[in-house]
View (cartoon, rainbow, N blue to C red):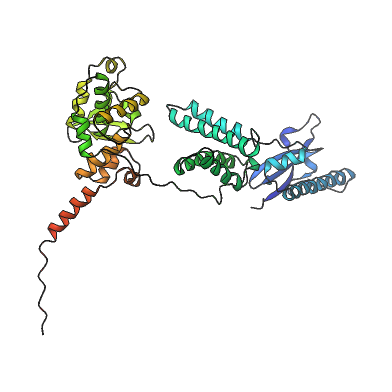
Length: 413
């Protein structure tokens, strides 16, 4: 886009010197953004024409000052054209640097990326989670390693980042880092956020992502079938450790809460709902959206079981949950003991709630979406796979309705 540049000379009354003379300034506006530079000349305010932007009269002093202003205007235009010829974006900042003779300081990618990550770190628990910081830290690490792999450098001027840079980075993630499609796309998405910061600050004139396209491939969600869920639910364990992990996993299967949201639960999150029954009212840490979930009998049993647990009492937690890493490690043991061949992780409980516990039993997807704390129902459709059994049940109802076909009226011959 061609820059719109306007030039105005004016007398700055607020900076009058001891002799009463006021300095003449040039005001340059580039696409609505202003810069001001002194011309080094002074004038009596009564001799200055604000409308013409020059000194009044034809005196030697007036001719000298006005001639200098004309030369300065040409200098500004020449500086603008030189930036255009060098393919440097014409901005208020670049034009000022050109006119003042200051060398333009290159803006490097890594410090900008690191500054972004530092701000996330300061906002953990307020706007971001530790997991978000970890993902961006890993993204920065991959970016630095890519720069070394491709260019043999440790950093790069952001103005050198173009479409080829993005496609080469994606290739690096898929080949050298062996990332799956969705993982590679997510790292590129993180990098895109840094580029958006540069664009917002006018450090870049054009986005290198303009012609770039990528797409997340839908992944089939793993969940427990009704038989598998009953197997875990009814299994007797010889160790309290596995029994605890199983109970909290089952709690998530019947509430749909993710690990971090279960971990954050306290007794204050239990309240009386609109139906007079006990509900869990909380906010998802990932999206900050509200989740309101009725407490089912099995959920209440687990809450009661651990109400007096030392960890629950001392830490004011609803349940004495272990670290996510330990939970997932012990769930693998539980899967083996229950003869479940799926790779059991804590997040599978959330998928199980969405499918086996709710949708399969006829709970409308709108209600499931609200309990899961999703902001739109399309997200729920990814999590909550409509099972063949549900489709079969729906079609059986349709068959019953169509069992008695309407009588056809006879056609008159």
